[in-house]
Length: 458
Image (cartoon, rainbow, N blue to C red; front, side):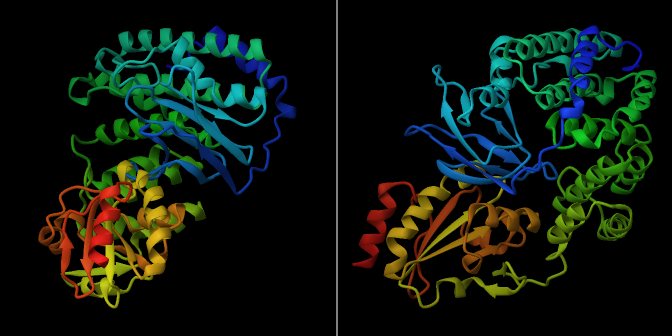
């Protein structure tokens, strides 16, 4: 269906870029990129590097310098702008606010590169003005139940996107790699618009047509682009729901093996296993999960994905008593030991997916620098359901592994119930005798916490 008529603008853009494809040598990106966020005071930050394998895990950037992986995507996810920045270099970038104070702009020191990095900002302003819950300019398309009508609307939006890309590229003479990336982004966003719909109102004939789109999801080169990831995810929903209304992990696994191939299949299998670990949208039995995990370790051919799942499942079989925590090495320790032999212990309950938690980490680092020499201990306890996401976040933020712990059971644990931890971030201050001085201590970025620490030391 999608290959029946190739829009003229898409063909023009592809022909233009393919003529230069010999020059499109994939650059070897640096291992990491330093991104400095120049945020004015009291500016909320929703800039995040989303872990594509884990919907619940998000690496939110903080004020100042952040180290992120190369060849990745940063998203401004404040619910209004929904802007993406495709980053594959250079090594040093800077986020600043634009003149409207609504958008973030990436600065690299090179005007042409800046135009590429900030293309989606220009597109958002020109083609898709800010709307509540705007997403890729396709807001509301999913509510159209009839496939033919949805395709017509998707094509209209797609052609507007391609025209803007064509005009923007011609105006600034931008690189073939840039053109290819955003051509793919718009192409797969169009597919997402076609696929994403209410399954309860979708006609069986439309489902059969959509299942024929499997050949569209074999572009492993586009795997790091969020538009491709989302389209592939929604396609996996279509093929899984084609067999049953509420597919199990096993049924979804089988459908993924049948309808995907290559690294894209490995990616989708990995997402399924992560969903099984977190047990929210997909709740397998222990036996079913163990069977699928064994299959995954044989079927997945991408070693980095297997290593990710290895981390995520490494602590699953560790027996942890009530009131105990897990260290980064998988050891179980009583909660009481975290404050032993310290005059004061400041405890930060957080999670890798919690934006406000991540935003406070810079202030926590500053607080630690001022008081750690006085013997005050700073402890970080994660409520993550996915140990892999927790460990990855610890490394990204630069927390001390010796004072970082995982709380098995999260909000449902005995400790969370004892200390009434319903939301994160949550902070506590513990005295040298293990007595809780403040069960709801102030955040690290407030003057109140410094006053509380000083009063407690005196």
